[in-house]
Length: 407
Image (cartoon, rainbow, N blue to C red; front, side, top):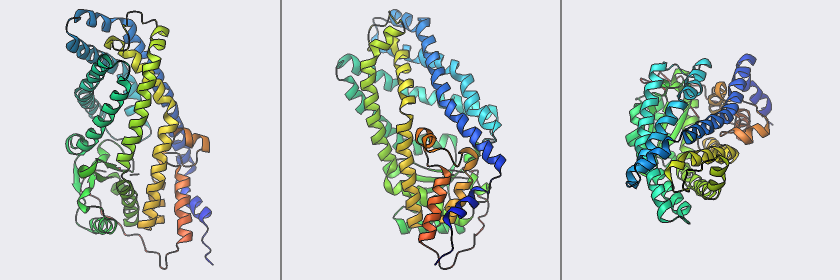
């Protein structure tokens, strides 16, 4: 009978970090929960200020005979004002706080340049989509939410297909794993699990973040697994790499990106339906007497306010959806790769930005990944049920030639 104790092994992995490091991770994680609330409050306040300024109504009146140009002008001005007003909050939440906790080494200038570029790209992509939604509202006032929801779902699926090819390379360099133990292991795993070996990349994620991470992006022919170079800078051994890539292969094989697109498309449909019903009441509550119904683009801040509240309320739902997918990806890794200790070591390195042992309620409400303590325990339970005849010694992985981050 095996003397291996999964509970003790889990505690040993969690004790890799000092009590001070765990306390810091808990402070960062729980502070992030408050960011959700304050981010929503700030978004509502900014939209309210834009609405009450009357500038969008003046633009509408000035371009009354040019509906298409008027809608686009209103949306562009609204996005510009809201972006400028939200910049201090974004600096704090996305750069300063990450720097303070040691989770990014990116300079402010580097962060600001990327923020400006992302804002410009979002404007080019999103403004025509919003203009199309206002066209649907005017043409089909009773059923726009249905057609709008379907349109947005199709739009974002197309964006997912195109992002790895046209958008992600703007910010990071993606390269195949260099020749050596990592590449050999990755290619072997890919062949064993029916994943094209040319779909696995290393990217210089350390440019933006010090997080130990990997991800899956794209759809269909553009779907790929990408490992941040942070993994290698934090001395990931071969077992860790195999476990992490196995986890991401689980997402790939389960077609989770498509599943997320479908599920969140349904949630978007529900959100549009609720916006349609709530708009008159919220506009009246805000005293927006100059807004001429939901089809008036000058009332876009009202829609923004409703969306901000709905997004906050939907957090437990969206978090739970992704948390289930992450659990299934862990199971795939354990079943197909059988590196429970490699997975546990990798997970322990993520504790610095994701507290390991939250309460069940906190996990359900806020965590889009299972708690690290629970994930490590699942790996140790798997190890107990599937003892390896001869445990393999960790194999050191040479530093990757580009920068990197994990799960």
